Image (cartoon, rainbow, N blue to C red):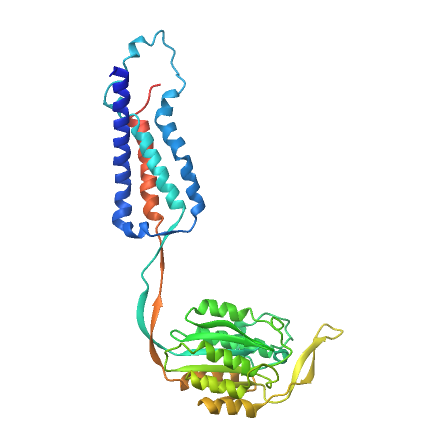
Length: 387
């Protein structure tokens, strides 16, 4: 083996040894801190991992590529340097490049944002399973006065003389009801001519509040009122519930005049799944005020309009399931009805599972930054190249 070949072999051995040692030192902290979690982490920004394709170029440029630098010193002959380089620092000249490459890998992995899904915390909680059934038929555009001041934050800002509608009041009361819940699983069904599941019973109150806040008239066909279908859909959402207390809370201001399921049969379905049906009639009569545009001075104009109701049907449905019927003539009475329903329900224990997430990038960012700092220090103070 020629001296040149021996020098190349030794250089490769030193380079590979430095790479292994640097990688092991870099992974000590991440492994001790969050080793198993990093192995099973999910990467939130995987596009950054494409930067690892630059690693071979960076590795070569930081080691063998340094040998191709343009000399800065002119000398008469290179013959005295023919047997160089020599000495410990010369043999370790590739260490900074190795350190830089390993640090680069750690920083790229940190930018890819590894996230660990922590083991769900399971606890026994007390609560009820309830499905709120909200009427989105055209009659919900009628006015509903006496909105409590603390509920005004839940309705859209309108002109100073525009009065809240029944839908505004219902949404505000429902959102307030959701905000006060801690361990109750709440679901929402909306209906007009047909019934739709807005959300099954859930503990995700933030999502539920957002969904309710987006409800508007004309999102679904509001030309009719399918009370039977709506209660039937709500009962279906509770059929797999193991809670002792299950409730369907129906908010409507009209009479059943559409749908494929009769209200009486829907009440039977509620009995089958063990749910009590609480009916809340919004408004106390068949005449209600509705905004009819604006007058010549830009002020809202209101006219009286007939909206048929059927309190006898609502009371019959509630009685069949052991629930109760309420009449909410204004928003304050509507909120009182909700809280009275909650007070009547027996609570039961169920298992609540809440998962949390932990960002793991910091366990890669710190050693990566330290390795780059070490690279700079080695190049500047210990293993400087000449020229």
